[in-house]
Length: 297
Image (cartoon, rainbow, N blue to C red; front, side):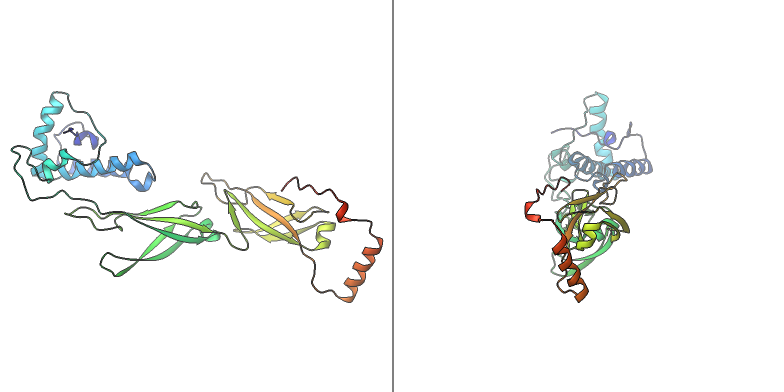
């Protein structure tokens, strides 16, 4: 059996502390190691469990008194070292099946946290960029439906998870409920697609815009953007606009990547047909003899 120094876990130097001091120490450590501010950090998750375990023991006068006898022996003789391990034999001394002093079996079972539940939430790219509040409905273990509000922060990454504490499966023997983990899935659409921190968009041009060059206004993910089109641009060529893409989580943004697509009208006016016919007569351009190299694509 490995001794756990619950006072050290709560950053307390002595056991001569009252319940208010224990509560304050617990709040400070729980806030520091809470899973919501240390997403994906397994060590912090285990430390958070030990912090809750320590508080459960030290916040009750009877279990604190029993623990202090062990603490005085170990710490007094300088044998105690903090071990970041799961709940085990040491915790059951106070809440489990075996008495610390005489080994008398008890009917009291250790509290166990409920299982976490995972689900997915699909978002449009604009919603993920701006942030949004969504409602999700889940079926409880009793078979009923419950609806929860999910606040999605602006710039959340694809496959990133949001944790809702206590919204998982119920705990047993007085243990806390598990958590709800919501994996974000960002959907591409006909206008925008996400590529890392860049946002890709097709840029549709008329033949004369592509041939002569122009300045046009397009819809960005969160604003209208003026774009200069160089003369002679071809379908498939790329125009990249810096800092107009997706949020990078560091205060910056990726690029807006525009891929040119030249569209030919399906129908012409008589004048347009006349002009195209005249252009055909006078132009020496032969696209089948052009060495095409999209250096920026």
